[in-house]
Image (cartoon, rainbow, N blue to C red; front, side):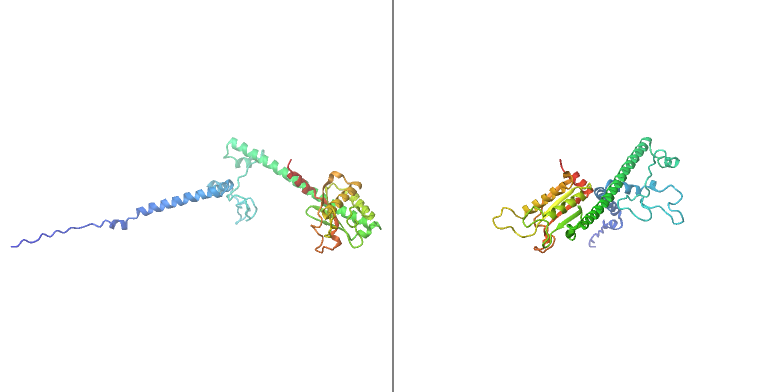
Length: 322
């Protein structure tokens, strides 16, 4: 009998079978990715938010921030509390998004105030009271300063209206100065009350190319000086010319002429009783700020007197460097 071959059967186990049905590593990986995302989100929030906003976020997620009062703030079935201190459903731009803003009691507030700080230690309570006292004092000072500023602005506006009325009455009451009535322009600017004396055809404040005014021009400057001398405002004087050039070879130009005329105006204002210390600026602007676009318009030749606003003057003095 011939030898028959020995058949050996080997059974191989597939190692990947369990991998397809076991997903524990996926859960761990997902948890890791989530944790990293939360970590970087936390870093980003710490970088882009302020301490006030971070405090608001912490209060929002804190269960202690929920109101302990049983009744709603507005009363009624649908009455509720505002997220911020603003009444109604408004949301303040800079208010932290907290559920309830803690109330810091004042000294002697009573039992209700004591209940609000019951959870604070003695040192924290004293510190909170001191902070509230300082904030109240600062707010009171700002309120008083705002009231004083508003009162000064109202008084100043009354003074401007009075000066405008007195100027018009003085011009119309004088037969010699009445001819200038349509050449004196009074308006309000960001600097204050501006009085402009312009020229017109055949009726000028100064002779051509001269800084010595006509007699009627002198009377007009003295009259204006007597009126504005009654006001406490500081004064700015500027001279303007037209674009007509000087003759060739002349040592003077429109810059020189406008400056000389402005300084002459200053001298007559002082003669009329204006305190020289109140005149803060005398300048010549030549033809750089024309009254009209027509270079031949005589109104481009003018004197500008500005009663400066007191608030603006105080700000400029505060900005001055020693």
